[in-house]
Amino acid sequence: MRTLFIVLFLAHGCIHFLGYTKAFYPSFDSGPIQFVSRPFGLAWLFVGLFFILTALLLIFKKEWWPIVGVITILLSQMLVIIYWKDAKFGTIFNFILLLGTISSHADYKFNRMVLKESNMIFKTIHLSDSVVPSIKNLSHLPSIVQKWLTVSGVFQTAKSVSVRLKQKGDMKTSPTGRWMPFTAQQYFNCEDPSFVWVTKVNPLPLVYLYGRDKLTNAQGEMLIKLFGVFPVVNEGKNEKINAASMQRYLAEMCWFPSAAINEHLTWESIDETSAKAILTLDDKRVSGFFTFTSEGEFRSFETKRYYGGGEDAKLEIWHIEALEQKVFDGIKIPSKCKVTWRLKEGDFDWLNLEITALEYNKPYPYK
Image (cartoon, rainbow, N blue to C red; front, side, top):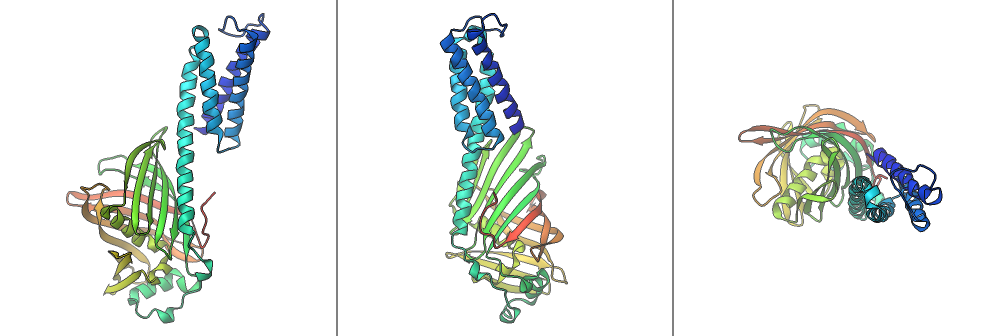
């Protein structure tokens, strides 16, 4: 898409030069425009150069290129209106470029918002807290949880105070819907439980959605925008979203197991291979059940979570299953997972994801 817009800006800029040649070299066959005065010829040249400048700014990924682009497109359309009889088809180019530029500017604003929110959750992190945990002080934990932490490598590496990771996979929005590919980045504060997750989903060719989930101060928010412009979902700061976001953090703790020993968490033994985890934040409490293999590897997480983000959301069983394990930064985690809603009418497998990169104790967003 970016390459296409670079080509369109360059092509439209070159077309504008025809107005200049008609004004200063009238004998030269310069396209459909019949007559252009020299002042307006300079205007066509000026706008054409600005189209080339916009393309260069886009090539070099300058964040402020949409501002130049919109100004250039508006100036171009003014010339098109003045020479409407000969140049009216330029409106099509300008309309396409304007839509793309507005969408790109919306992308920029969305990503700036995510960057700001991510930096905020990292603000309270102190890397000096990332000491190597000792199993000697964890006898109060269920034995299977201790085994999980040992097998994961928690006692051989520094404690995770922050996490940043990248994901890819596909998702559905309904049991009968089509699979949609997505990529995502996520940031965690492990000491003050919070996260920011941002994703780009492609439901159709040339169509995309930006999504952002977050948990801060025990409050959750969910935002989805079509083309980064049009809000599709904007829910937050209600008890159902808050609980769902806290449960998500609890489940995704399998990617940073050392958080299992934090003060916000308590554990209850269920049997030899499972335990109940209870997360408490600001007097809000959620829980879920972790299941492990007999060797101590994470196998699954399950809880009752609100299905949907609106006021009519109902509690349904939310199940996460580990499909593959991998070592990142010395910690063994489930790198591939399947997420399923176990509804009354049948299982709804809605998300398949893979961790493609993960780093601990680097409290700053990806560039």
